[in-house]
Image (cartoon, rainbow over all chains, first blue to last red; front, side, top):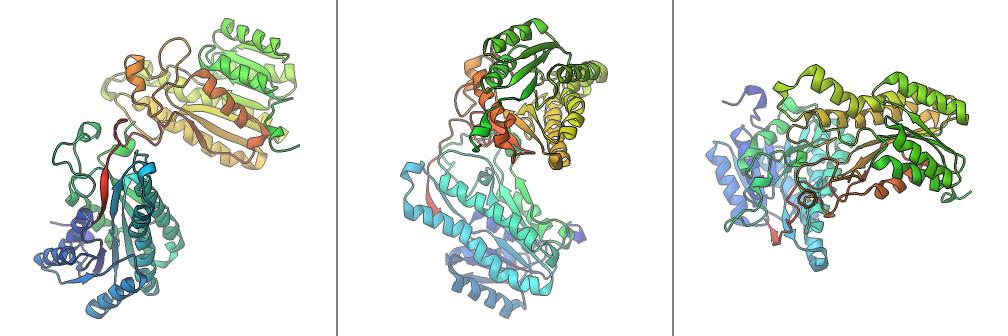
Length: 250
Length: 275
């Protein structure tokens, strides 16, 4: 039974990147904790799937098909959320494009896609949806990121650069808006069972992870719920790593 | 004088507090080659007397002072003797104990007197004693540098049976930052050399965890650091060319600090996928 001071009763959460398994799991947790969910993806089935899950928790949900790398789409999402639910309390920015390739093989258009999807979407969504949060004097922005924005992993220059960028964005915006009542934090995921690589044929990593296993997407839920709740009003400009101890690994 | 000219240590008096083996002798020679006069302080004075002779052969002044760095009064006496002999101290490099790993046992078996106290002294408090002995003098001169030799990994990462050592390394980083902030206005810069796995110069790496080659596989650069790797960076931090750098850990580690997220041989391939 979720303690009452973690509940998100009737708060409106915009969850972008609904096709990202980690964002979807976090979005489902927000719904389970009481939030109404605006599920956003450039893929219809992904937006619908999260909306259906949210309704399964007895919440209301709206699926919006939109491209969060385009300002006009971001504004449309904000308008639809406001029209349907009266406002936005929470933004879970989960757009994610993954890529692992040696730098020499990283194409320019691939670089642009990774930076645009992972980084520009955070800027656009925070700006558009954060604006009314600031006006209201209250809000929660959580950016889903990866520990590759902190440590160094070979073959991931584009992806790691995009993650480092959004972690720094969070720190800057967190302090910029610190006095407004809008908190801005990052959840940095480590090695999870979905969303990065194909481990169906074998997994080289678990023995190297302090907790000896990958994370399951639903394990991001409680962190997202906490950061979204009124109980986390003093947490801002922070990076909460959910990584089985990986960042501590010597 | 250009910024690059300031990389010289001409006219500077540098104390290197070391074990006499390993990194210390090389450190002293690099400082001397950059123009500094050297005080080599160690428990084994025979080792550092040899260092002093090598420094004099380079045309610099040198003194070897027997110092047990775990005894605050000896550290103070060594600094006082340096000032008496050379007139002042510009730089103190505290190399610490090359082989400190703490007692290898679970924490509940740790004897506070036999394990915790001495290991904390060898790993952390000796740096405290050095800073304590020299800072007031540096404040009075309105100039000075302190360089602590710390760990590239263990100040913010953990490992089996390393709780004392990691506690100490975190402590060194904290000590450096706090003193750096307090004495920045005194024109004193205090930084940490974040050294990775280095050979002691005698045999094997500082943090022995198995045969040398096996251990080196876990370092991105695939080799241990060697004593000559450390000297030049320390010279830079000792010089006036680094007067705007303070409160920092400067890594010298073959890629150890940012690694640890994945095995060394993990070079993944993931096609571009927009979720």
